[in-house]
Length: 365
Image 1 (tube, rainbow, N blue to C red):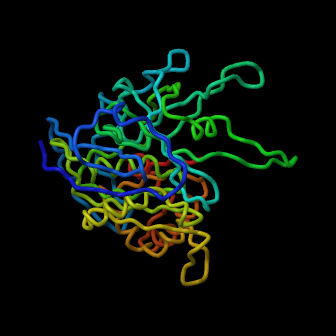
Image 2: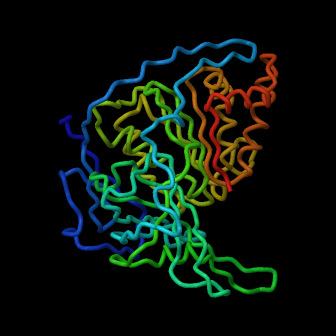
Image 3: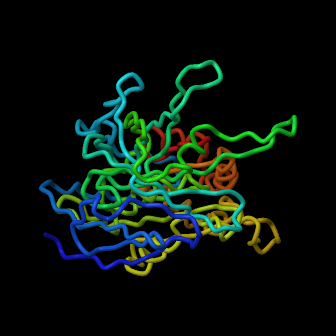
């Protein structure tokens, strides 16, 4: 077994937290992540396998030809649609805790469901959830997809759980009526022990690159952080015989207020322990401004590193992942167009090449 990693971090404080007794969960080691008062354990994992060789970077002043890589989507071990709406998996809620501050604009909850190893997902995939009850037409609710927020080992390290990061949807419509999202409210209100109807796993777009020496730039707004938490746990909170991340992971996370920052303590712990391999930059739009006095959105924060990011994007082992609100992609395009033009490169055409080589991966809503 690999040497143990020492980590102890906590999520933003809140008065709301629910969990099943610890005896319901198989605890492997003393490694611990504290979900406030709820102990969540994980372990280091070993397994056989081979390391993927590094791909050397090549910087040019023309749109570089992309090196042929082993496609992440062709991995035969990636399972999709094992469970469907007519034949779902019935899991059980083990833990559900609010991870935004009480003064945050909206609630976001972190929840853990049992799978007993029957839902074999990978980092970057999603699962579907079907809320209990019937819709206004007397039919079962339609499934809603959620990006998985845990590594393939799960928060407990035994490959028998899956975690989600869900924002409670509540808004006022044009008639002044308060509307609540069916599935998000169902999930945020779940109590430990309650059954959950699960489908999937689904998706290959957001799977991690196979190259352990890659540069991975992750852009998230709000709960779009979910797939990147799964990436980062595998990179920095786990040990594997067949995977050791030696590259650079750079996370940009945009939220409205500091009380809305999700998993902040986890990311700070990762940065503290792996400063050469992990960078994190927060963009807090209602509290921060740039040197021009403009609100600090994720694209505003990225603009401060524009030239450095462009140099990284010219390398064949740099991968961009984007998850969250649609608007941020246009903001990033606006940054890159002029920088690419200085090198005689058409940014939109270059981005098409990046997509084709699986270096530009987007999941927005």
